[in-house]
Length: 261
Length: 332
Image 1 (cartoon, one colour):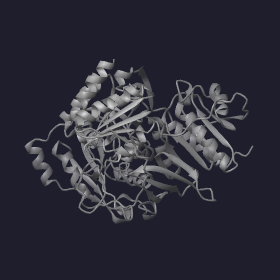
Image 2 (tube, chains in turn blue, cyan; image 1 turned 180 degrees about the horizontal axis):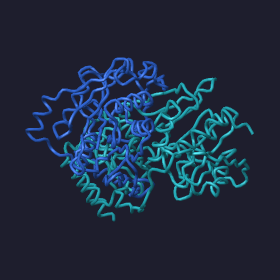
Image 3 (cartoon, helix red, strand yellow; image 1 turned 180 degrees about the vertical axis):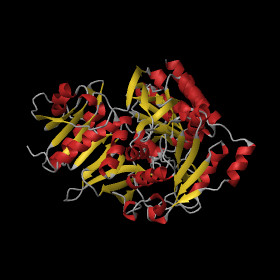
Image 4 (cartoon, rainbow over the protein chains, first blue to last red; image 1 turned 120 degrees about the horizontal axis):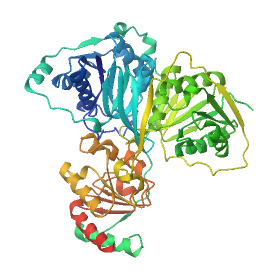
């Protein structure tokens, strides 16, 4: 079983700083980390490998340093990591990114199962799993909370339309993983050592056979025209009190007098 | 009727009925079509398409296209993508609005790849701003601190739209419209997946008291740590309130995404929302602005949440909770 996990490097702080002058993201000095839910996608992959055998390949796209987050996956038992990195890919939207990742997966030998996290904390679109599934002609179970594979059939559950669906699908499949699916294991000493010395293959546009016009800004079909801050609402009532306790009492009195409580 | 270059809404059916989100999109779609003197078309696929077509017109469409093929009875993202792609190629709409439900996002992402189209996900607004046929899509960015305006350079313009943003029109039984049936050839494609079991969950099971609770308590970074968050949860339980968290707590791994209140989590509309230690980033604000009353407690007097809370207390949430708990319990 060829299992690929798509992961992403994201800013380590969710409280991203915005430069007030030009509304740009302040990236300088911002630490990076593995998109948190991706660890659950890696765990799902390792679990399938343990159950039915196979290899787990972590794959990411980004700058030369973006591959570092893949060490978290190697540390818990992933077999290898592949970094797709090329300055001509900078500025790719979901359309271009989906294409690049699909081509890269083909290049590393294809996949029977592709796991992803449900969303990234930065882009937060959730559009890469269906995009990759479409390019590769694969089934898709998004926002999955459980995942079992038996032969060529996958059985998974997902919340949808106010209930829980049990979905059966045929391999090959793309599955985006919710945090609720599993509890990621902690790395062991040996795993940490493997992670430390792991060397990742790097793929460029030529390696994956994608035309430069299909990557980066040239290959993107969306254009950000404006970044703007919302208008503030009118200021509300601040409830006073010498202490927070007193303020809380005053608040309840106000709510009662206004028949809110 | 002019059926090219118009506004389309992909209609999602849930148990054979129009989803609430589809009705919201028909409301917005009507507005977009009117602003360009064009028509609004609903595209329906699946079991229930025939019986709901009239409703799609009643909620604002001028015409309905029904995709017909026995394999399209229930949602399969590969087959539905093929159906939408083929019908789109024939009619060349200017825009397709898709609800950002789980299935809608799957369809949108596949459609973007299949037709090589730009896609804007989870939009909170969309309008024709200029004089040409370009739509300006707006979505939250950078964890919701800002909005971005995005154009798509391809046609049809494709976007998924969040729920509870737009209002549907009142149902008008007198509206008339054309119903067109299109047979879809899915070629060699076979359904590759099916829903074998569906279980409706109660509010408790879904932990979606977030949808239904009259009072919701939200925990933010001010809780300090996971143990602090648990104290807030206990407070919520004690006063019979629903419990949710802001995005940073989910990002920290303290709570699951199900509990996330905000535009990329769960949008809430309770009678009272009590935000404890929540700073009030825009992505959170957009998720709670439909609450009838917002109460905020935060140690930072400059926290943005005080700008949209109706009542605010500057202070330690752990001092405020016991007082509220006692008083509210007494009132009950």
